[in-house]
Length: 102
Image (cartoon, rainbow, N blue to C red; front, side, top):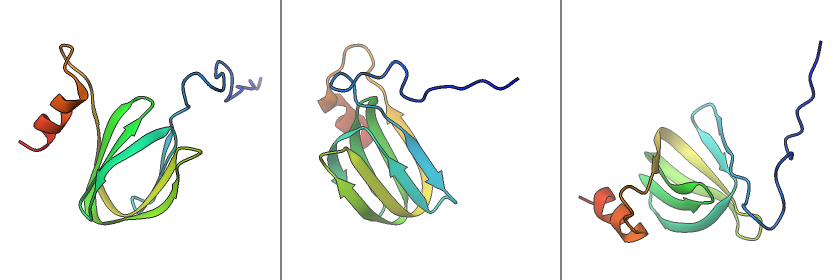
């Protein structure tokens, strides 16, 4: 018995942008649902996504593709970790940066 799952079910355009992270061989990262690129260098990217702030750390990181209209970012390089910086105790986004750069 096979079951079809509609990937767009429950997704209404214009409300919350869909967020997906796809990694290929730990060398290429495709991310959708990106609202803003906060900062980046060859060791770390900080992205604001529809699901919260996402920190990507690695080595020789480069932005391969950026499509602001569609909210798509592609990053190449050696990926070490992906971390979502969740809001805790009602802290504002400014608090994320404080934790990140301690």
